[in-house]
Length: 75
Image 1: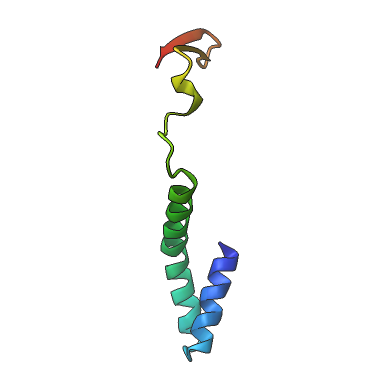
Image 2: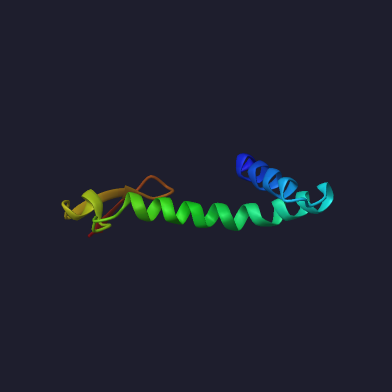
């Protein structure tokens, strides 16, 4: 996130925006742009997969709750 903010900040400075406004815009833009980038990268990584993973092959799994008791989950 710091690298993304630095890149946005540098691009705004090159575009002629003063330092105070460039810093403000870099802070405001880095979060939404990183979210878009993360969603884009995740969609590329899962292209062609069903999204169920290996859990689909196993009919039951055991999960421990907070007290350590075993709970059975059906998929």
